Length: 461
Image (cartoon, rainbow, N blue to C red):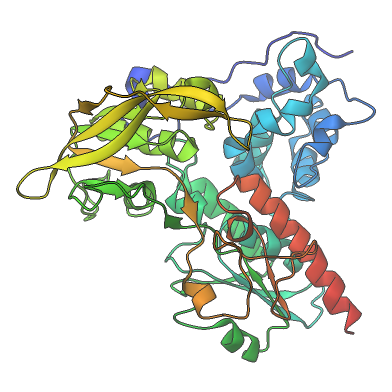
């Protein structure tokens, strides 16, 4: 009989006024007792709607049933049969819109804490489990993967399990993509990402870092190295700006640059020689998860932080959990506010941001109410730094070196239903195709591409 407690088992967290001064993980994770209790809330539905909400089709009721029995290793085996990065997904997936959003328990209470349980199982295995024996029969075929982010790592892992000789080419000096440079330590510890990457290396996946494809090597040169297929999972790392006056002033960052300096280059640690301006008052422009990450990092650097968003809170695309945590940590929200120009002094340093108040008008083509300016409502926020977190698009470097790959008007790679590009033998997925999206959707694309690559290469035997 399922435990019909209507609320999830609470996840322990650092206190807000303590965590907003450090970069340690906010959520502390379940104990064994908490995990078993939460697993007991699962109804083990016959139709398993939660599975349909998972882009990588984890057998959710099956792994939860193992947790309920205390068989955490078997739970891990079930998860990793379809998910190569469970410790990552358990922390950063928007479960409320995916697996947990489909959970029957959510109709008359809170859904089962699927993400929390996945995180617990992955962490328990990392701390207590034994490395599985790898017994993969090589099939003699080589596949290259461009980009060591969630799409690329998932594709690489799936192909390695099928016997392919897989090499991942990564532009940065560390594998992980957005998991390393974009998501802060307090949400996703880098040791967790490193452990997940190590698991893939144990499958035989080779990772070559400092390989900027399109600069160091072209896709054609990779093909000439004997690779029979290439998967491009290079992400969407080119930041977007508003095009307003003052965006080139000293003290204006893209969220990508700011977060990369913090997360990958450890600018928050005194012992790391990473230049970053000492900020006292900062405006973060945007309302997505990246804006929340940038704002919460700036807060931890000691700044007074204002998130500037042109719509209301109800329209914010960020996860409700991230908005809640930001508010708890003392971050200010300027809703229905839009920047019009950035002010700077005689030394070209930021000295404020001029904004205008907005109201919501009629819905646009996407169904969201369109923000409209309120005449005469201009006002100035006193800040010394501005972080632009209004979106990204794919970096054109690789595509400029590969003109026979077709893209759309947003610079995203066009693919078929099987993730095939217009270039023979080249596949693509993740943010390079969709534009900036979620980690798990990128993983789903990598998994789909791996299946297509396997099918196509087997057909040539």
